Image (tube, rainbow, N blue to C red; front, side, top):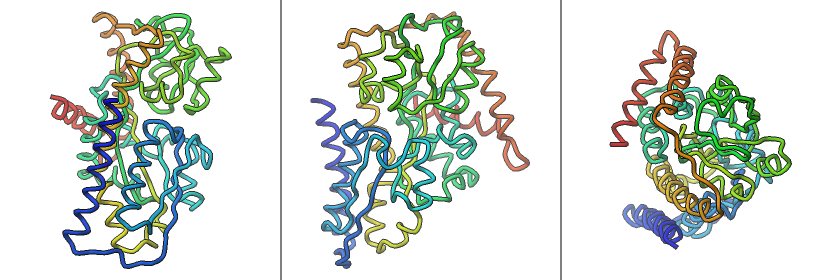
Length: 348
């Protein structure tokens, strides 16, 4: 009930923001034409993220007197998590929910949040970090030039999830077949002896059920969105990193909208909208942790000694990442250090 109330409040804020935008400027939608847009996401429409974006779409429709209609297609029915970016770019879908970790090499600086045990694990903190870096570094902003970027934000902290045995030490990863997103985390778990399999969220349930994998890395809201608590015994209470999400729109479809409709969309998007999405994600994750506990699953804690071992392995991966993004115009280690410092600032 608390989460439902929180999301209702967010949607009300969205609607008020739109109403204020048009009333303050004395604007009324001038176009009689209706613009129907598709939004593709890999989460179900009934998931926390699906419900949030339905509220976002409803607020836009109301503000434009129904002249901009966004229809959400969930569960990868229009495009898979790994293909939605290309589908948006080509115009196959109008708006897409892009998880950067599925696009190896395409969003290297945006993926700074995916570095393990670097201080990222809170979606609101991560979103503030992303926007500070986006506004400062043209190299990061350029990663999104193929789209109209609507939102850019972080998800809740990703954690180890397993059946058969808990994960509370680095030795526990040795020999595990583990689902991971792509990115630095695959190098990390490989270093610790696991065999990573990159797999989109909708495939995890069946893979666990059939014992094709014995473990995975995911965040709490996603776990309950896909009912993974039903096929998982142990959840390690150790936020490893954040993932980065971009809500992107086809540039031609964006340019075809009248300016007042573009303004309506951006009044509930951009940095403000991204932080609202992150707040909703955080509330969803908090609620999901109770669902996981109520399902009879076990939360596992990591000792200080084992945390130090996890951290030592992460430090090596992160140093290599910083070296890999270094160019004659960007000091990768300085970029990483700044991101970590920002996380400390916003998390304090």
